[in-house]
Image (cartoon, rainbow, N blue to C red; front, side, top):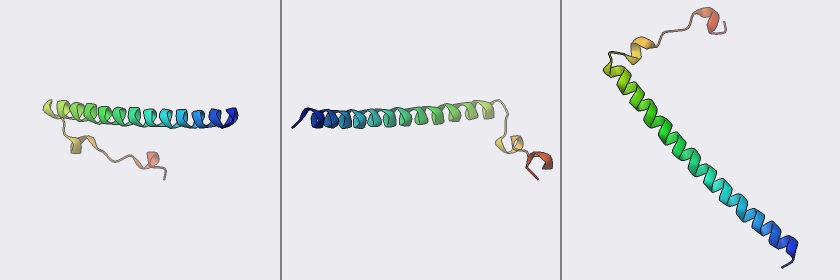
Length: 65
């Protein structure tokens, strides 16, 4: 195998490794974000908050009409 072929093969493997690492990090970050949001919502509800009461429709000028 020529040097350029070996170099391309090594670059391809390195790219695959980087992609797998980034995918794993993104998955962990997503799971961590969901857990933190769930904890924040639970804490807010424990303090007397209500998800339904906090959602209010936007005034007509902010809806883009």
